[in-house]
Length: 199
Ligand SMILES: NC(=O)c1ccc[n+]([C@@H]2O[C@H](COP(=O)([O-])OP(=O)(O)OC[C@H]3O[C@@H](n4cnc5c(N)ncnc54)[C@H](OP(=O)(O)O)[C@@H]3O)[C@@H](O)[C@H]2O)c1
Image (cartoon, rainbow, N blue to C red; front, side):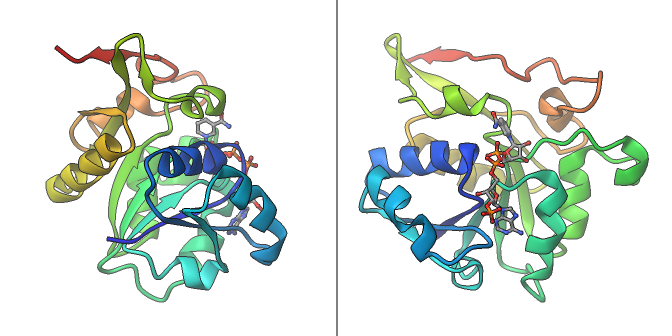
């Protein structure tokens, strides 16, 4: 399985650190030349590989860590998203009307036609996601939601490999709403930094 993080800002860095901590290779890409992020990537660890967007999009599992406004530029970069698993780590303040009345990740699933979309790694601020998830004798919780059970399980396994404790919330329009950040209608689990105790 190959991985890529699209967007190498605050969330991209936080997730790259989790991959590096666990010795898992991941491509990172922005709109810029990979050389321009090479020093930053190297500072995180040798498993963080700067690539062009086109190269990075060859990965099986792709994390969207760009600002929501940039999602369509990423979507357009591939003619077809069939066979890809997309992790939507984005939040948006866009009015519901702009999203066809859908929760943001359900909207993303429509835009990235053919991809299996899992909402995840979006509910914590980057400064918290950035930290080693092994804390207080347990593991930091990440919430996952998807309309595809197999994809949810696959990303659950990745979250475990990255050291987190995944909790599956169900479909994008049901469980996903609990971690949906939009205007004044914040999901009840947004910013809840929970630790699962391993017993
Ligand atoms: N910051 C947080 O605490 C936080 C918490 C939870 C969720 N989120 C969500 O995570 C996402 C990223 O937030 P952030 O704070 O990490 O943003 P950020 O620091 O502004 O980083 C965005 C990154 O995306 C890159 N980018 C922009 N357009 C792109 C494109 N078309 N293709 C590839 N890369 C592109 C930018 O690089 P270039 O412009 O150089 O290409 C930059 O590296 C947002 O959707 C946000 O809502 C953020």
